[in-house]
Image 1 (cartoon, rainbow, N blue to C red):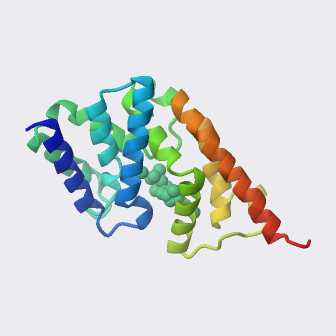
Image 2 (image 1 turned 135 degrees about the vertical axis):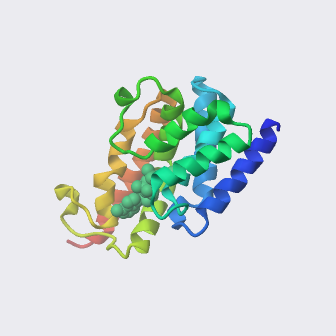
Image 3 (image 1 turned 120 degrees about the vertical axis):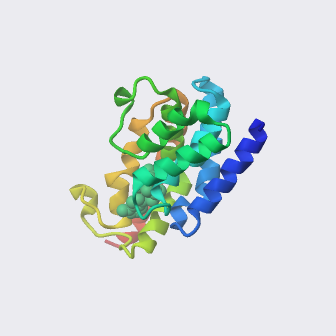
Length: 208
Ligand code: ADP
Ligand code: NI
């Protein structure tokens, strides 16, 4: 089996797996993360490009509906998939990325020997900031029926509103980037968050 076929089969596997999941983790998030990860890797030559593609495609699959929240079961399914499609050689690397990518507390210092993880994690985090990140956050907040804003949350850091989530997570991501290229893109996207908040408060507190 050649690599193009392996990519197509992985795309199909991911599409099946994400079906019915919330729209913040939809197929287009995967497409964007894959492109960002490839871009970062092309700039920094940190990992094998094919492995970056496969890891980016699969990075959210253990979250979803394979086994009613049983992650171990999901890892087994992914392992079987990679083995059955002739990708045993990259299997352990890819599973390691899937297991670690979304633990927001992980910093580079916790995974000093895993350039593949740095790349995919940066790409995933970049999709949570900037204009797309704002759209995803309000989409998620709507899905959960959370308020858009609860006055005072920006200082308390315990947000249940979507604006609160900016302080809990989104505004912190820039400083959590692993790669120089990721950090550069994050700076632009971070500015969008800041501008958005400024405008938001201007409108919210209009006239006061
Ligand atoms: P990851 O991609 O790291 O697994 P999550 O599953 O935590 O991230 O979040 C998916 C998307 O939903 C992200 O864009 C994130 O910012 C957004 N999100 C997560 N929790 C909240 C929340 N409480 N309020 C608003 N948006 C959220
Ligand atoms: Ni993701």
